[in-house]
Image (cartoon, rainbow, N blue to C red; front, top):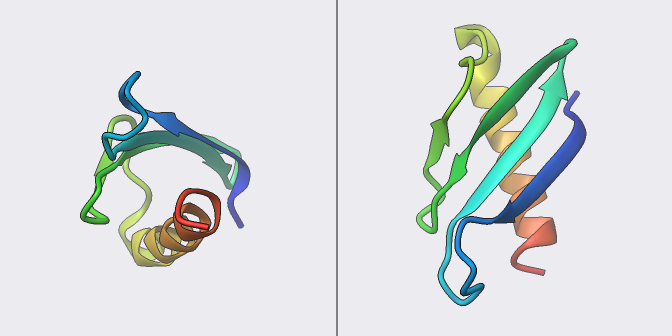
Length: 69
């Protein structure tokens, strides 16, 4: 489960899409960029391969809820 999810706009002009995010999963902090096309770019440690798809789905849901609501 994702904990302590945070995000912010990449740009001062909030009209431009793109966000940075961070969260904790299994006691480790993960960071990345969420692009306007839904692409996720990890900027820190990459989640384990067997968990990455699940985490990406959860990230998409969180971003849809917080950004596009």
